Image 1: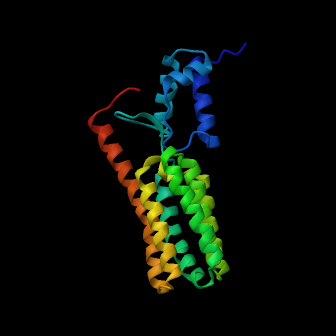
Image 2: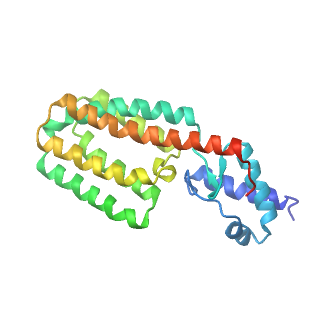
Image 3: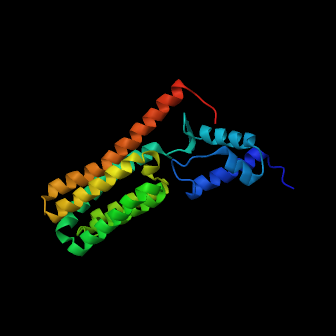
Length: 227
C-alpha cells in the first residue's frame, strides 16, 4: 500500500490535469468536488492547492477562489506580440485571395462563436477562434509569414492558453471585431488598414489579459486569503 499522503495525491491529480490541459487557465478549482472524487476531506486538497499556488500554477482571487493561472506570463506576452504582427500581415496579404465562399465559412464560424456565448466554454471558444482566423490567414501567399503564424498558434497551445478563461467579457468584443475584419475584406479595404485592425484585434486581447493579471496581483497584495 502506498505511503503517499492525501495532500500529495491531491497535488498529483490537480497538477496532472493542469499539465494535460484538462484544467485550462482560468479553471476554478472547487475544493469539495475534488475532495469527493479522491475520497478525502477538503483539508489535503487545500494544502495541495497552496503548493500549486507557491509554484505559480494556481492563483487565488477574492470572491472567485482558486483558479489555474496563466503559465509563463512573459512567454505569453512575447508570443501574443509576435502573433499580432505576423497574423496581421498574413491576413492583409491574404485578403485579395479570400473567396466569397471562405467569407461565408468564416462568418458561419463566427455565428457559432456568438451562439456559444450563452453557455460559455473558453476552451471551445478558443478552438473556434483559431478555426475562424485560419480561414483568413491560410490564403496568405507568403509561406514564410504563414509558417510564423503557425508557429505562434502552436506556441499558444504549448502555453496551454485560453485567454478567454481570464477575460470572458472579451469574447463578445472578439466576435464583433471578427465581423469588422470580414466586412473590410469584402469591401476591399487597403491592406494597411486590414493589417492594423487584425493586429489590434490580437493586442486588445493581450492587453485585457495583462490588465486582469495586474488587478489580481494588486488584490492579492492587499488582501491575502485562504481557499
